[in-house]
Length: 457
Figure 1 (tube, rainbow, N blue to C red):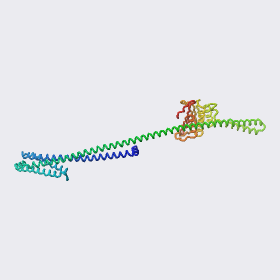
Figure 2 (figure 1 turned 90 degrees about the vertical axis):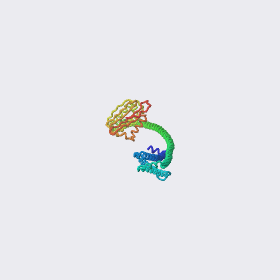
Figure 3 (figure 1 turned 90 degrees about the horizontal axis):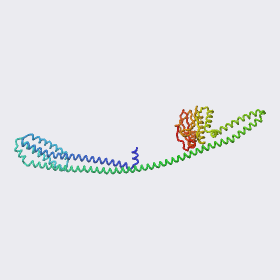
């Protein structure tokens, strides 16, 4: 894939590389074939030179064997003569094959054949005369200059053929040198082309690296800008959530105060009026007295409902009795109302009033969810210090849920998280199906300006 990407990005380097490779292959193959042909031809020329020299030497050997036989009459001198005849035949086979077809030495080769046959015929004739009992005639034939002239002609033609082969060998060697030089020049030229292609590739690669670095810097700058924007938006949302929670609590407080002052005064005044009427009608109108008793009872229930609503809106015990006592009252009322066993382990902590209210609302929302969804038998509520921070936890043994796959938390959990984060705290929710649910919040102590670390069970 990397190679394909490089090929797609490069429109010059790859064609140049293909041309260079093709040229190297063609040049190498051409030089190889030319050199092989030249070397083969040089080998044949060398074989022809060897045959020419062997021919001359064989004729001399035949003549030497002839004269040794004529002088000594010993037949062992005929063995070199016969061996020379075989070598002469072999030499002519090589020469005929080498010079086959029309060429500039065709006439010289024919003369060499003719002179050699004549010389051998002369030698054979003298041997036959000696064997037939005419040694004197054989000696006279040898002492004549006919054989000497033929031998000189043979030597001359052999020298001419050797000179011809030497010139051809020189030409062949020059061809090999030219081929090697051409190959050398081609390799140099292709090396230059390769270096040019490599230079272009390096320049292109450098440009790509520079472009990637610029793109990376641009992406990093955009990422930094987005991170800063996310931080700013998160801070704004946190401030907004804190403002909304504060406004909500202020509205609750105002509503609780109005209920306490206005509605409380009205209900109390109505109860006092009913008591006065009852005292005046005592013993005179039993039916009216019974109705007044029912009215006073209804007013008492209304006053109790008013107090309970006020406590839900703004727990007065939180500012009067403290967080621990308020949570004890809340859990005890929950246990009495729901029949669930509540186990409390509450310790006094140092928190701001707003953080105490958030913890109260967190516990209140948690037990509300337990009442609605958990079907729990036991609830554990803890409050205390841990690692220099205040930790509150509500755990139940109810139905639970899969917190790992919960992508969109309910509004209750989301509201808890906003409340806790508005006080620079951290909320953790851990739950498994059938294993209950743990809701844990951590807050900085009063006077601690650092935010709580993001930890969870």
